[in-house]
Length: 356
Image (cartoon, rainbow, N blue to C red; front, top):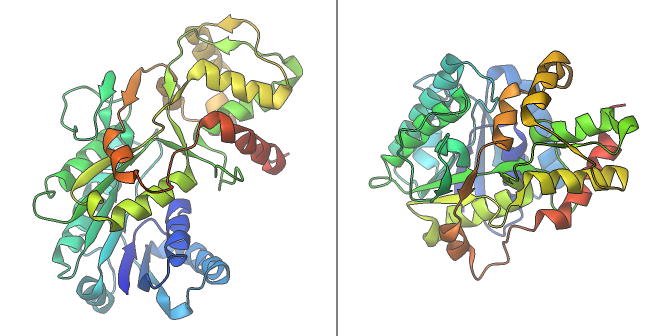
C-alpha cells in the first residue's frame, strides 16, 4: 500500500487523478488531500463525491488544511509530521492557472508554493516519487521544436503565468539528481475523449462561446491565415499517462510533454468546431489584428471571462516534441487520441451543458 499527498484539491484534475488511482487494485493506503481553509466546503463536497464514486473508505481520503505559500504548508503540526513520515507519492498540482495573473500572485503560488512543497517532499524518508505538474508553455516565446529534456532559455514569456511556472519548474529540475522526480508538462487540457465532460468552460472554450453567441451570423469567417499548431489534450489522457509515469521506473527523473504528438492547426480546429456547431465550414477570413481590436472594443474578455492573453497562443508557432513520452508509454494502451475523433463529443457536451 502507498500513501499519497495531493495539492490542488478540490481542483478538477486532482479529483480525477484520485478517482483513477482508486481504480488500481491494492494501490492506496491513505490519500492526504491538501486544501486551503477557505475551500473547506468544496473539499468536503468533492470527498463525498469520490467516496460514492470509488471504493475508497472514509479513512483513506483525509482532508488536510494547508497553504502552499507558507513554508510549513500543512497548518496542523501533528498532521504535517504524519504526512512527512508516511507519504510515498507527492502530486503537486496546485497553481495559479489564470493567464492574466499579476506577477506577485504567480510568484507566491507557483514559485514559492513549489519551493515549499518540494521541501516537504524532500523531508519524506519513504518518498518514492515527487510528481510535479508544470506546463508545456514554460517554453515561453520559443519557436520551432521544444524538446522534453530542455528547460533553460532566455526568451521572454507571453504572460506571468508562464514566467512563474518556468521559475517553479526550475526549482524542481534542480532536484532531479537528488530526488525521485517526475515532471509533467501538459498542453491545453480539455474535456474527456469519450464523453466530452469537463468542469467548466474556460480557456479555449471561448471559441465555442463566441461561435454560440454569433450563430445567427453563420457561416463565420476564419480568424487569421496562419495555421499555428494548437495543442489540445483530453484530460483522461493526462490523468492516465501521469498515473502510469508516476509509478513506472521509466518515469523516474524525466520530464514528459503530455501534448498532442500530431496537433492540428488553428484554422483546422476552428473549421472542425464550426462544422460541428453549424453543419458547414467557415467562410472568408478576417486578419488577427482586426479580430483583436474587436475583442477589446466589444469587451469580450469581460463578457465571457476570457483573458486577452489567450489570443497569443493562436499566433505563436511552436511544436512540442513527445519522443520521450511516446517511448515511455509504448507497450501500454495509453495514447493521445486524435482531436478530430473526440472533438464532436467535446462540442456536444458544451451544447448540452452550457448556460442559457
